[in-house]
Amino acid sequence: MPTDCISYQTSGYFSALIQDYLDQKPALQSLYNNFPTLENFEKQIQEKQSNFDSKNRIPLVETLQKQYQNIEISDSTKQNIELLALENTFTITTGHQLNLFSGPLYFLYKIISTINLTKELKSKYPSNNFVPIYWMATEDHDFEEINYFNFKGKKFRWNKESTGPVGRLSTEGLAEFLEIYSLELGSSTNANTLKKLFEDAYLKHDNLANATRFLADSLFSNYGLVIIDADDAALKQAFIPFAKEELEKNTSYKAVQKTIESLKDYTVQVNPREINLFYIEDDLRERIIFENDKYHVNNTKIAFTKDEIFNLLESNPEKFSPNVIMRPLYQEIILPNLCYIGGGGEIAYWLELKSFFDAANITFPILLVRNSVLLTTEKQAKKADNLNLSWKDLFTKQENLVNAITHKISAFPIDLTPQKEALKTQFEYLYNLANQTDKSFSGAVKAQEAKQTKGLENLEKRLLKAQKRNLNDQLQRVIDLQCELFPNNSLQERQSNFSEFYMEKGDQLIPLLIQKLKPLEMNFNIITI
Image (cartoon, rainbow, N blue to C red; front, side):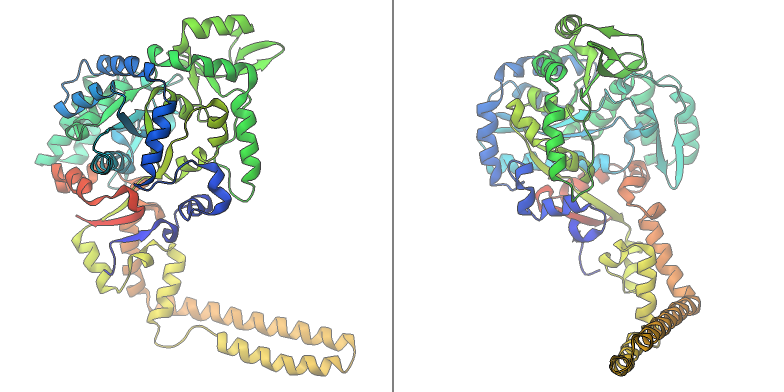
């Protein structure tokens, strides 16, 4: 194969907004702070150091120590938690939902991008410390998005009722799930390791947040990863004044709405509400709405006057949960964070938020598109070589790829462009004649040209279809390979679970990815395992 990576911009899987961000188009420069280059982190460090409230470091460290008290953690993770108390320590953060058994493969790539960036920064700026953070989305409530994963083309779903924040959800019922999944895994050494990992994470921890922390720590603690559950009263103390302003002045709505108006040429990722806060309890997460001089909790009979809701915010801040618009601000308030690493969709909605951060006087982080990876086997790579396919070819939408390959391997030209050009030349002569007669003849010429051009186009389509039948065997090999690498005509990293590749590589999988991925290069990596 000619290359082992392609650019995000040419992969066909990133939006126009993200492509233009990566190309640093001038029209978007007001939407972010510093672009993700190693040199730009010097300025980001200075900005964050001068703007971050160092009083927030103590509750951060204490909360993390409390959250880790029932896990035997590595020395590197323990040290990183302690380092967060120091004013020369900064974080690099990624966030992810609490997908069952990590969900799609990009869970690994997000965290590895975060770990590897901290290494690069430590090498470049040795007088500072850099801690990789995985922010668990424990306050989300869309259980249907996270209650399954795919393994070798089969979907394994956890059926359970859930109405509140998913982090507080009981793991009861997953023993039966493991029995079914175990049958699919088999009994190899790596299969048994996966079974034990699932069992230790989900059958020995009472809720989804604790189970996910154990899982992520088991996979990454040797690299000093620190995992945070921000659904915590102590952490939300620092968020209280910003939540008050949101309730009273709708600050985020006003700021983000203006930014959205400037993004009219792009697809908008998220739209703000007038109040971008939820009210939460163990079995409840609903929007807060202001109507008739009262704050109402949507779909309930709960309502507050202004004084009542402000008093509740002071006494029980854990009952207030930021939505997708306000969560980034909450993150940057409680963490000494320099950079957020996310997928294209995440970075797209972060790009809507800078004006809101400016209004709140909180430093806007560097935004980095996470590493993307296509994992292939040596057999698949050899197959692609034999079929004379480049990686760029394989990233092409299937219909376009099949058409291109048919044109390429056909023994004769399928493209009737020369005939169309010849037809155009003939009709130019007829148009000259028409100009010397009347309008009715000009109309007849135009109609005849359209009819004959359409006829050639139809013949071209039929010729292509006939050649596809004739070349079916060769084309089917191309289709089969692409379907192996792009399940359901989608990116592998959005479909497959890490366990599928752990079955082959075992505990070598993550070290291999750590070695190969370079977060600041911002390319789509193809890695042969």
